[in-house]
Image (cartoon, rainbow, N blue to C red; front, side, top):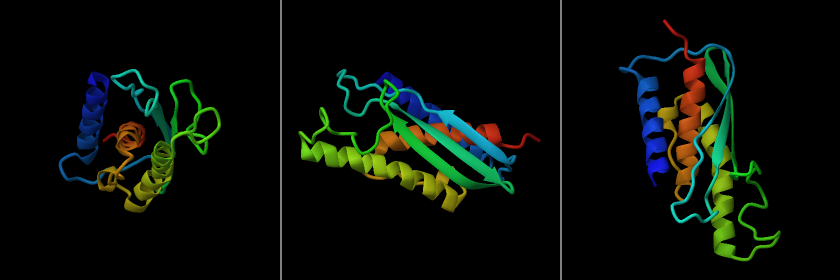
Length: 149
């Protein structure tokens, strides 16, 4: 729980720093990558564990592309198999929730490109851990891209 709260607080702080005092943030062109903290369930269960990696491309000073992927703690990318047990769907509800979270990764990335501002990307119900991972990693990547005056 503490790790999740600390990571969420760090993401919120980074968001506030990026938004500044209402001014416009300028970015250097390039591709910037960052990784979220590792999220670990308090009960030690494996469901929902992992981290996210975001890769943001800045072109002409604006966000032109974004990729966001989530991974198990062992480094396995969460994809079509995420939510299955030994290759099969043992719990359909869990599998559907897991796949909803996987789909949210692309939504978060496309919403950031469309909005051009991390503060305008909304969480998807059922994919809030992914949202925390996304905002944390995206804030760090955008911080790397930010032009320093």
